[in-house]
Length: 245
Image 1 (tube, rainbow, N blue to C red):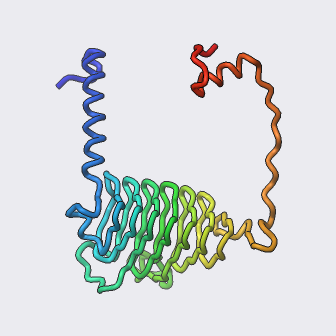
Image 2 (image 1 turned 60 degrees about the horizontal axis):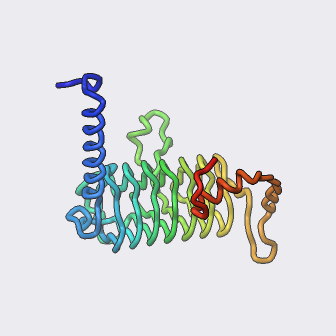
Image 3 (image 1 turned 60 degrees about the vertical axis):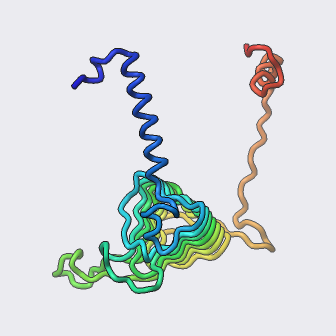
């Protein structure tokens, strides 16, 4: 077996190109789509939806319902119940709406009820769960105490930044921004920005008053461009055939 540094530059370049093309092909083919055998395990997987490869831990598919045009990123965990094969009954546990984007490495861990509305976007590594450990008995290891559960709902059109944690019982309204790294528990209204650990409302919007507090005005920056800069810009925009300076 050759070490990479023993290959000639040309051989190494050709091998790298072949590996990259093969991996890209594998990712496209191995993605979970509605018409694949894996896709048909779900309670529903809507038209145009896709779960990217490589996948994270996925089980309890029959209790997971996903709408149309939704994209699940690579390494995302989707689970319903405690373990594969568990009888969870006829009702959905995890419901993900239409045109949702779940960022890479995120986790949606459902045991009772998680509802993610339409047009919800998340950054990578977001964690959403409706179950939490308890510490009611100080003499019993926490992992052996029976956890508590509370439904979670994320409203239509909301955005969850990178690393957000949504805890059991959370209810987020529509068109809400959750700042990166926030830990969310509780109920939050429509049209607001929440941030922090624990998260709180830092900005809200009403039809009568607009944003409170208002967003700061963007400073006006005057930029003077030389004729050479303008000529180069024209070339880059395809409006001039001359080479840039």
